[in-house]
Image 1 (tube, helix red, strand yellow):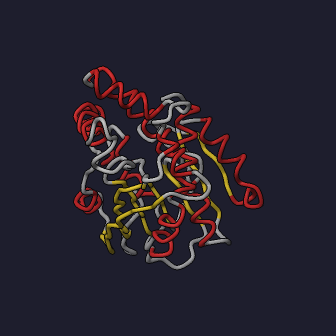
Image 2 (image 1 turned 135 degrees about the vertical axis):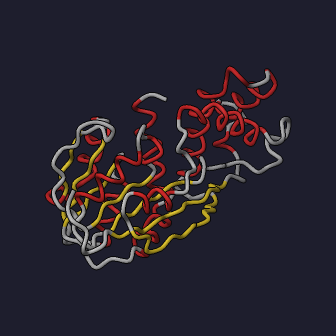
Length: 272
């Protein structure tokens, strides 16, 4: 997926799943923090949700992609003065991120080569008693009914089965249970919850655009492995001029699960 395409899908993810993200932030077991670090911030979905809940906080938003940080700054508007953006590779040398009361990592840990090292680094920078919130999607969102499209029922499930197999080596930590890893890094797990997501069509058309962009990314991963019939059916869905375009369907929904782990740095822990 191109940088532009990835930025677009992050923005669509933020728009479509905003309510679910807000409910996770509302659930966090923490007094209003003064300093927040958003690790792997993307285009700012977590940053802005956190500022919505904690309007007095300062957020340091960290990402490896400069185009994501540029987009985040463009979107910041009235809260721009409360957001500092930092470009950094979390698998490399870390910049000074201060002494945050809350560290947030949404859909970012599974991308890391050595997430255990990142968890230990987070433990070291957190203020005593501070909270580390880890949020991960169980898998990529599904959009089509199981019996769709009519000429190739189950197409989406077959595509994602291929995608999961191809990504297993590239992203070995995808779908991990982060509870044991957090404990190994010195955290105490305060709580954990899994949220089922099911969002139907919206008047804004955002679900359709999200599905279109998501399936474009799926095609890029699995096209070489698909049967001719499945690839042709997928291309009909992706052709916005076709009567079979996914944008013309009225039966789309976003279906996935999000799990959140809330882990505490104990108050008697010494800084690393």
